[in-house]
Length: 114
Length: 114
DNA sequence: CTGTATCCTCGGGGATACTG
DNA sequence: CAGTATCCCCGAGGATACAG
Image (cartoon, rainbow over all chains, first blue to last red; front, top):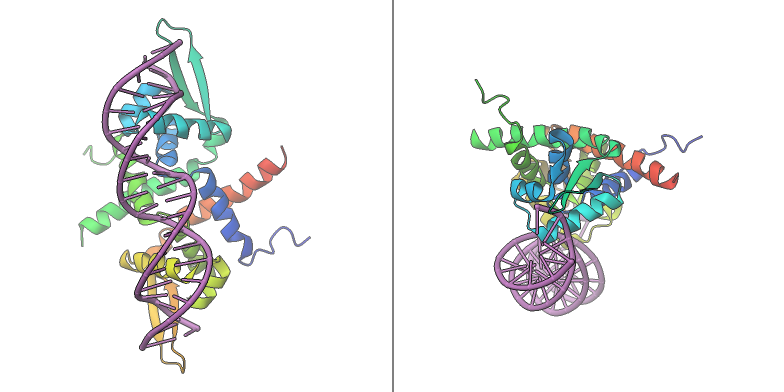
């Protein structure tokens, strides 16, 4: 049974790259941070809050949906509305997201103070 | 004292983006994971282990050095050699790196099993 | 061995206008 | 309101060859 921990080093790269592949680009982690930490949002809300243009936002959300990280819910309202929320699986990314939030904040304090 | 937790949501995006800005691209986190978890490496070793071409590797390492995440050490050997290692500041990224490694592994297991 | 120099490709990502 | 359709641009990143 060496499968379990023979990674002195090798598949570490692969693991990182697998993660990067799923949350690639400038926006996916931003979107996920909103949904995971802030709850459900409508399409327009996400667009305004994040500053992502509709075209890109659609694309990012579709990719996230494919990877089962967001759920798309269409509502029967007069002008149709759509709600996006994070899935349980996205919660497993919270560790990554929160670590990045913490580091980003700390980093900003650091570069400001030097 | 609202500075501490008035981020109902807003600067969360900024924090994520700050982090993404520093570790942008396909390679920086891979390189850091090698140096942080695996210790000092020579230029050629990094290139071979990661599969990054010289030109890109140089660029990435320089950017990481600018952000004080790696240290470059030139050695007085016959054909000059250079050693790269992670800085103490890079250790603060370990939390992010390890979270991504864990998630990547878990994710691979998940997609394989479905 | 550690880089630089050149060249090239490809697609991420933005702007804007339009549709159901 | 929630997307699509077009158009466009720039730069990340790869290949290869060369230099100190």
